[in-house]
Image (cartoon, rainbow, N blue to C red):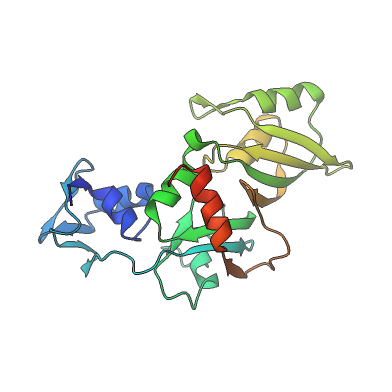
Length: 241
């Protein structure tokens, strides 16, 4: 097997997403043939080299797993939390393979979250270049004007870079209206930041759809495995076959 970037190998090995794997390398948690590696450009051979993360030998997953979880409120989308908060991993107990979250939902957000041990799948789902739309229901503490709605759709400045064009539709009137928001990117706290830009706070946020996959009636805190047909459909969309 040819040499590949270390973060890609870790993702293929079901350790974490490629982005998270980069952090593992920077933190000095990865060794190759007994040597700590902290350079992101480092390469290795999965079949030839002994690659360890936190002292545990990396092995290829025996079976690729794809899970849909209804993330509840008040838990973090991480493998573990230094502050001792509840994590999404507590809701996928009983899954024998080591899976990790695909993308993120922040602490106070809920809804559809994918978990997998397929690193390439995770990388392609989260890449804005693949235009996988994520759909959210958002309750705000006030209306946006028509001009603000259009500016929201066109994109706003966020951390020095304009947000990608987004979908926005008012779906329920009231003093605290509900909006449907559709994004093809998933920058940290993006929806909350976008509403705050217009002087509005997000009171509730729920992701209800990733691409074609809907949250549906899955209860909060419960998970299910994706069907063979759902996985095949995602792989076709992501051009993985």
